[in-house]
Image 1 (tube, rainbow, N blue to C red):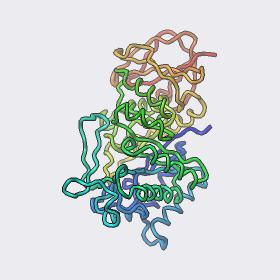
Image 2: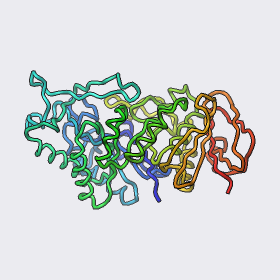
Image 3: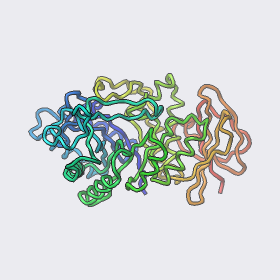
Image 4: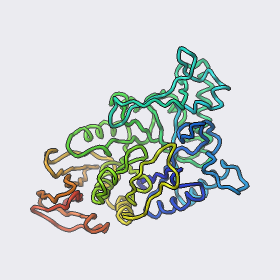
Amino acid sequence: MHKTLIYNIFPTLAGNLDQWEEWVNHAVDLGFNWIYINSVFAPGASDSIYSVADPFRLNPKFEVSGDAESGISQLQRFLQRHRERGVRFMTDLNLLHCAIDAPALQLHPDWFMREASGEPVHPFGPDPLDPCNVTLWDDLAEYDIYGSPDRLNLWKYLETVVDFWVGLGFSGFRCMHVTSVPAPLWRTCIRAALVRAHAPVLFVADALGESLEKVRALHECGFHHLYNSSCWWQFDADWALNQHDLLQSVAPTVSFPENHDTPRLFHKTEALTAVQYQRYLFACWFSSALQMTMGYEYCWQKPCHAVRTTQADQEPRDPDISAFIRACNRMSSAWPILCEEGRVMALSPLWEPTLLLSKTIDGQEGRLLINKDWTQPREAELIDNCEICRPVLAEGHWSWEPASGRLELAPAEIVLIRRNE
């Protein structure tokens, strides 16, 4: 059974279509079977990749100059070539808005929400870490997907966009602003994608920062995965465990150690490689799917930006933890506890310097022991009759060995535990 292992290529950081090749091949070598490429379609005047003016045309930044084919044909050829080798691609899907200067505003003014002044309404969204911190995007215009007098044609248009992107070769979507879009529209688009592809198409809901009540309501939409907030969990409170229980009742979840919207972990920890290992393996253990942003394996520190990021922002490829990433991904197929959804519980007090977690799937249990201290070794008591695996100390080599009594963990070390059969 293939696990859902997603490698995120941030397109402006990677370069043009030809230069994406290196990163796709690299991701496949690391064991990823999905490539998530952020929005790649023609932007408006703000030049933000998330301010899409024409969803039927490739962003000119990504076209290969000198190629006789149109940009969109280049993209289709690229996607289908890699699809033949078993790589599947996903991109961003936003049914809530488009660029403020998109032709649709002139062609279909009734499709958009309006202020009392007649100006288009700009969308806004909460910070996942601080829901009280709300961002307004003034380069975007919000569709009136609930109340438009021409709602039928608006929904048909959005369905056509999804159909077109699936026809290009995309097999999945990171769905944005999911709680602001009616469930029937999501169901319509998911059904249309399935019909167009003649195969399953993955719809992953990004509801980070939304209330638990709104997330619970997504159950009727038909999403295949939900992003969870474990990236922000410091192992010191039970909110992440409670959230995980709730999300599982809606759909399986996706963990990530960082993403294109967060600060880089290596920058946040002031260059602690041990934490890079810890958070990746934790993400692999915690939920059924995993996503990693390009450069994480090289401990890059510059955050991705929707407007300013360019290929010049790539950093040196040292330190390089690729071997560890590759080993974790390979092990996810060998040990059922990794990259599978299960009931996760804390078996030790959350205030202690180490944390012991238990995950149960169909009666099979696996445990995870975490040193929460990034700079000091800590000791913890092991259960009787167990085996442990210490891939961080073994530089990515996975081997199980019997252990008992007290175990000293290196700073930020993470240890896998299973009962000795």
